[in-house]
Length: 388
Image 1: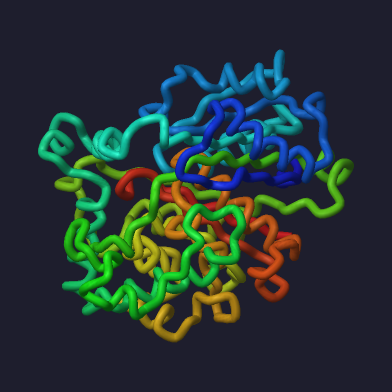
Image 2: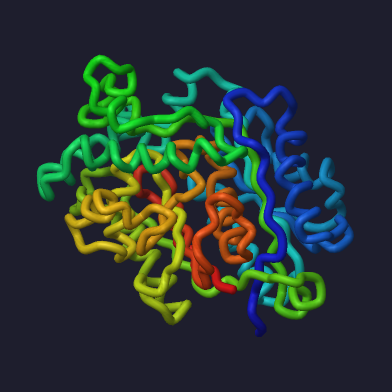
């Protein structure tokens, strides 16, 4: 079988409270991707809809979206792997195209987090853990990642000041990203001032400034066979490598707390499939739901040795002009995190980078880009490698 490409990308603006319905929200990302690819709905053979269903009031949103987006009678699929749902959706779309079952597949990710209250949202996030053995004891996402942060700091000597540098970078680029939910400046002084609200504790050692915000948003990726890509697109971006992994839901069953094994495993698979190593990656998007998550990603992806991730951010090597630019769209810390749309948004950023269409955040002539997308507290890991 031939290669598989991405020929269109789209994303809604991420907002704290979207005023319309979920189908209208999904349409925003879908419309942008279809316009980008210059396709009509008749060109789409199948659709893959991605979200975390515990936040959705609508059961089986894939059917609703297929109708609203004009994609009947084509088949539609529904994918869920928590925060990595739309990266897993890309994997499914790749498989559908690579197998020859379909030629052009639309991957639509969405989440309208504002349909439920913040307290309800936190409770549902807690249910991403084992509802028999962990979540009944009050564990929630910040507390889980705080355990990783504490273990990482104790093992490698990282500090809150090191994590603050990651948030400053996110703000640097988030301020110029028109799609981001949080576009206010965040300075190092704010993050080191004990009187500033950004240093208020959430789950020690993580503070307000270390955490991303919930958001409403949608994304869409159009995946096509090699023949269709060459016929329909002037600048296809090729899917070079895909990796995916899982681990135990219960943290009691894990041995590593200074990194995520699913990221390591998924990265190894993706590098092998693409025939490259971390030194060949020109630009990356990583899952920075918390600052510590980005720090661990530097090392899990091989951009730095274990314990040396802090040196990358201290030397600004992950800035746009650095050795390995990471999250130069502001990341989840600035863009916000609409669960099912996040992976698609990350993929969109890398596709635009590889097409040299990223505007103010454009990296110098990248040829290979990487997307690292994590579901839950390191429960699912997806790494996607794209190339020109």
